[in-house]
Image (cartoon, rainbow, N blue to C red; front, side, top):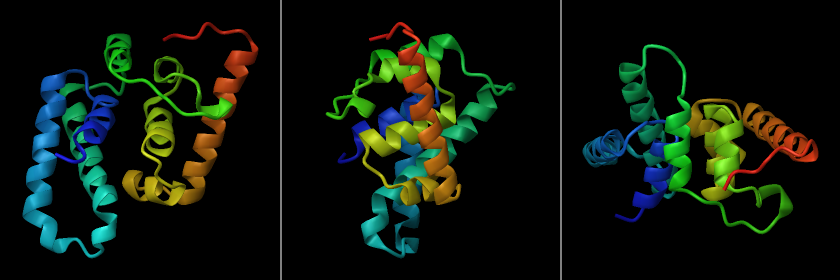
Length: 157
């Protein structure tokens, strides 16, 4: 499957265990297959697919977690499997560091922007937020990470 790794990383950012992640990916693919005829712009296939995945991941998360809390174990398990390999200083932070210091929404925005190379507009479509909101949240997350580094916070990785 062409997008398997991308879908895995995004679902894993939200869900605790691999069984749930793979179930959500499978459900996403089934829904995508059944509704493919409704896709108006074939060039937007990946964005459309990730929208379905995020929605399904959130549904599973809500069913399994009555409270809106992400456990440290969930973050650590996710961070063990993902690393970031991008050139600029702003994005050389490893994903483990990002996972341990950002909220879910900030993590997903950072992952979609830097790892998947989506634009702010595309991320907004995926997360059902305005483009400017995405840009603001991404900028604040980067500022927060820089602030932590300036204070000498220990990097995880």
